[in-house]
Length: 372
Length: 219
Image: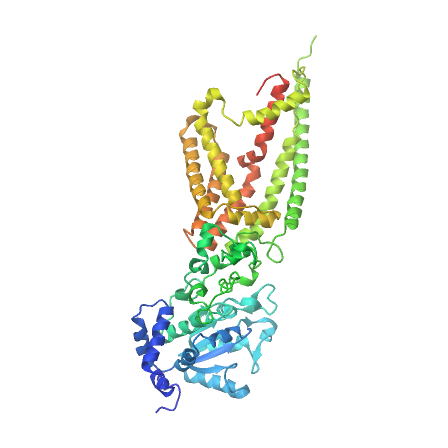
């Protein structure tokens, strides 16, 4: 039996943990289904994975809240979740690993050295660059330096969560730590963004599984997100969509429309502009998702979702106020001031017109032939 | 900043300022225009003249029986697309929500499917209006850039709105952004083009009617 955990194939590791081949094929079929791959891909994925060596994965946490990791570890089937940790060799995650301090950093350095060019780098959180990178340090190294160093030997980088993908909340105006997404720091590596605040656990595991199985970066959208999970808007797949089409909207969170499950568009739902799989994969084992629980989508998997106006203002409404909403009083002030200025300009132009008219009349009177 | 955020944020704010400033400018300038004094002896009292003005607002808004055969179709076309526009602008739920956030007042909406049907009809009528303008020799001679551009910018709002609600032609955020941006453009153009007739049409008819009534003519 091989000793080094990187040399152990996935099949061997599964056998050690008492997971049957049949159970694993079922998992792969479910994963293939979640990724909208043909059913035949399930067994094929299983075969590929069983004989594959477990890829080294390094998980770096930067400026984040650990919500993404919480999501990652709360997949709806815990045994499947543990399976994921057996398919990959998670060599560094300072939140999950038992080792700490120098031992943990040594493990990361060793994994990076031994798997140079082959490991998958998962990044969770944005990267602060302000104060010389001093807003986020671990083991005496700034996040930005750690990322640059770890990215050099990575086969691919998977950004887990909106912070790593697009900067997220730390990136929001006024961005006090001068935070950047990974794409703002690393430019020469394949980068897959799995956005969401947090992302759906099955989307994280599905993306990793697809990369590990095929060794290729999946088809990505313009924000480098896997199209298979981010190809549709939540609105497109929302069970409340028929009510949108019928023009039936809830006006408040406790009115008759809300109780009847009508569309939450007017209450600020960002489903029509948010690309994610919440409406299909859902959360907590397919139990529900925010809209099904009665709250509009916040658009958390989109870039700059924090700075796109109020969560409770409809997408088509004006959004220029401080909180992204517009109050009638503010509109009245702006419109009134503009109208006063316009009125003054209008009066001035009318005055100029009258003066010209008067001069013309005066001239025509002067030019009239004098009677004898 | 993405297109939608710009269109409903700073773009809309600037457009609203230009609209209010421009409309106030045009109305005040119009109201303060010097009307040449009529030195003739009035044929009607001031009250009757004002009444004549009000009558003209109504009578000039309806085809004259004598000319109905020649002007009826055009007027029906005009009324139809105006009514269609009013219904779409004022009775579509997201538009009501838009106005509600601006003015703090909302009202009941028509079902979205009904609005879609009205929008398509209005779109068709708009095409018919352009066809008439281009094919009718007199109207073609009377038309200038202002007429065509005012038609174009209004049509742009209708088309982008239809595309956004039916999710045809691109991602919703892009279509909605284009729809609001085209509305911003319409607001900017409004005071300086023939769209300003929305404010001028009834006062100008009333003034003409009152001046004619003063001379003893019935509108």
